[in-house]
Image 1: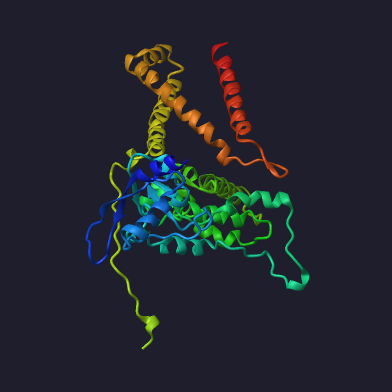
Image 2: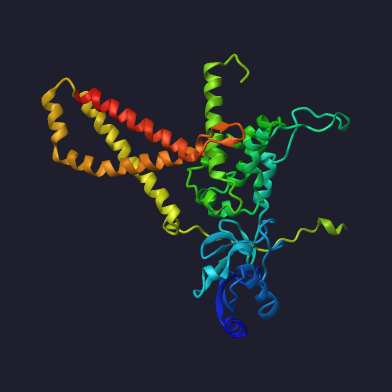
Length: 255
Length: 131
């Protein structure tokens, strides 16, 4: 036990970390850090080791360490990952290249500017807007388990933005509303208590919305919460198409 | 003067998207391959239309069907169309959501139903044309 522990602590793994210091660097560089290799460490543990013991200037976001907060998303060997869930043992003994999430502007080192994503969430109104407001005295808005099942998968989103970093459409057309915002719009549109689908339609059913998506499907692959944003977008396309046919075939019916 | 009013913004770095972005990941490559197979799906549809236009003239019909260039087109188009159709059907469970109470109908059932429909239609067309 003691022998294997000391053997393990002697082993190291190399991180190649994207560095960008605004006002100091014009171009980003990669900096190499050798950190102790521990079988139960994740990439975030290794970054924390660098910050605490090697280089305190390294900047990155993290919070919960347990795949819930969605703060520590980074590109790990070119793939968007929650670094709290990416184990060193899956890369050892090769070096691990760590970059900020793709397609977002870099503020510093591994920290991206997420304003665009937050703007899109408010554009799409990713919150519950009840069909009719009722006073608290009238009690809760009730829902059956079957009604819950219809949107539950999409409600698991933690806003980590890995899906945006996986989406080449977003990379080429930054106006694209994007996977998570559309999946969240579906989450509320499919909620039996919500009545604001029409308010979301302009943002979602537009060219910058669902029709920009070419169904690459990588958003669904990288999602740490199995939300399936690619599925949400295609399902919204079916709904939009049905609406269009209804409006053409039955113009006198109000939907 | 209000301190809140001062906006500090440092220069952000925008990473350019490389022209070969689609070669950087397996999922991107298979997406591009799938997109490119449409050319052959469309090409084969055109071939069938020209063939249909010559139904009244058996010689022109046979000449079109047997010309070496078009035999090559069919040999190349067959795997492309198959790849396109199979990946298409495999994606249907993402698009078609069928609920049975609180449970979603299994993706295998939805894709399976599409394969069965494909087989039945193909056999029906085969009988119509050949018998």
